[in-house]
Length: 469
Image (tube, rainbow, N blue to C red; front, side, top):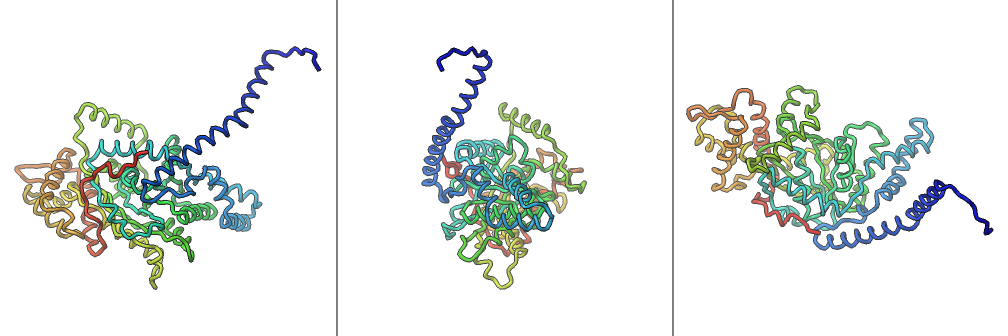
C-alpha cells in the first residue's frame, strides 16, 4: 500500500489533464453556469420593468431545454408517429429526424447580446446610412390587450429592415424574427440565434419538418413571445409589396384554440430613399431566375468603401429610412367573421402593410417623373397631387412637402437616375428599371386608399426607442 511506484511523466501529465477536465465538468462549469444564469435572470427582471411587453419565460429557456420541450411536445410526437407510418421508417429514426429539425429551428436567446450589443449596433448602423423617421408605435398599440401576443408583419424592402426594426421596437420588447437559409452562415447564425431568431426552410415540402416548425410557432405564440415576420417571404424585386405567403400565418391560426392567448397583428410599412440592394434586385427581376448576383466579397467591399467615406466625412448619406405602423388586427376577432379564411387574412394584412408605408422623397419624385420630362416646379406639383391621392393626405404637412421634393431630386441626381437638360428633369437612359422600382411603392399605395391608416410619421427621437441595460 505504501510502496513507491515509478510513473512516466507523460502519464502524470495525462492524469492531471483528465482530473482538471473532471473538475471543470463536475464542479467549475456547473458553478459558472449557475452564476451566469443568476446574472441573466436579474438582468431580465430589470429589463422587464422597462419593457412595455416583458420577455416571457419560454424565451429564457436554455437552447437545449427548448429543443427537448419542442421535440417531446405531444403534437410533434404524433407527427413522428404519422411520419413513421407514412414512410415506413422506425419511429426512433423518425424521432431523431424531428429532433434534428427542432435543433435547426430553435434559437438561443441572450438578453445581454440582444440589448447589450445588437440594439446598440443596429442603432449605430442605421444612423450612419440614413436619417431615420418613425411613426408613433405607442399610439398604434393603444387598446391592444397587454396579454396578447403581438406579431409585427412587415413589407420586405431591404436586409436593413432587420436592423431598423430590432432597435426601433426595443423599447417595447425583444422580438423574435423568422429568418431564412441565408442567415445560417456562421457567424451570422450564432448572432441571429442569440437575438432570438428562429430559422425556417422557405418552400420546404417535408411534412414532418413543417409540423415541427408549426408547433414551435404555436408554442411561442401561446407563451406571448413578441414576433416579427415578412409575409412576402423574400425581398421585393419590383418595389411592390408581394402577396402574403400563408405558411406562418396558417400555423398561428392553427394554434388559436378556445382559451388560447389572442394574437394581434401590427402592420409595419418600411420605405427608403435608397434601398441598399436596389441594383441587385432589379437585375434579378430582369433575369427572372430569382438568383441574387451579389457575393460576400462584393458586400464587404461596399461596406468598406462606405465606411471609408464616413471616416473621411465625405458620405452624403442615403436619405431617409421611414417606418410607419398600421391599424392592429386581432386574430380572435377576425376569426369570428362568417367568411374568414387564411387567404383572406393574408390579403388583409398585405393591404394594411401597403397603407402603412410612409411616403418619402425618392419614391414620390420617381413616380412623378415617370409621366415624362418636367421642370422642378412641375415635379413639385405632381408630387403634391400624388400625396393628396395617398390613403392619408395629411400624413405629410405642406411645409415638409417641398423638402421631400428637393431631397428626392437631389438623391436621384447623385445616383444618375435623373438627368436635367435646359431645366427639364427626366429619367436617365438605362435607369428606367431603377426609377420604376422606386415609383412602384407610391403607385401601389394610391391603390389602397380604403385601408386603415397608420399613426403620423415624425422625426425619430432615438433615445425613446433604445433600452439601456
